[in-house]
Amino acid sequence: MRGVCPGCGDNANPMMQIQDILFSQGFGTRRVCCGLVQQGLVQVEQGGEPMVITDPTEAFEPSQLAFWVQGERWVYQAQAFLMLHKPAGFECSHKPGAHPSVYTLLPGPLRVRGGGAAAGVQAVGRLDHDTTGLLLLSDDGKFIHRLTSPRHHVPKVYQVTVKHPLDAAQLDRLLAGVVLDDDPKPVRAAACSARGEFDLELTLTEGKYHQVKRMVAAVGNRVEGLHRSRIGAVLLPPDLLPGQWRWLTALEVASLTQK
Image (cartoon, rainbow, N blue to C red; front, top):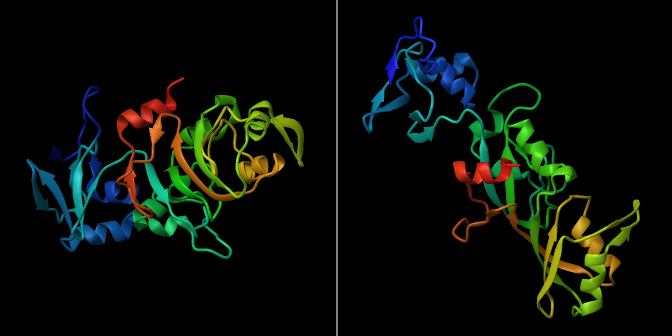
């Protein structure tokens, strides 16, 4: 739906100028977004067909609006919720040290949308540089807090390859609780099972620094490989290759936010 945005009724959907839509999605300053439109680099889908827009003040209903910027298709998202298959060798930091940032795997607009000091999407918790698997990202602070706060007990499932053969005593200790050097309170696995002589599936509901590696070390073993396969009810899809990302579906977001 397109049009000018004069006195919308109380029940009407709010309209936004196309330059403001682009700005909200991270395509640059308002001046840059205005220029993109004026140069004919923006198209908006109308009835399934993209139409070039050259008036930066032309208004549209943003909800699920599909548009093209310099040949790339986007769909308006009021807030960003996405998953990334994190490969090894990347740090979950905007200012990494010895390794590249995981944020470089994302398109530019996702890294700067929203502006301000906390621009762009943020990782929902962190994975070590050598850990692979499911990483969620969002620009919604409440969403991030819900999934990272130990108060909500959101399960995270890890596939762990260990150096020494597993035995029942190690599994029992992980379930009963081990004491880490910075916290006298025992840390327990919510679930723990051997999937092979050197393969462990471990479920945690809190996230401490290097927690899996330290828990496994506390029972006399060593982590050789670590992969996160699930957060809550959301699984890492087998067709999402390392380094690839996609938007979370509405059902996936609902499953992560429901009480």
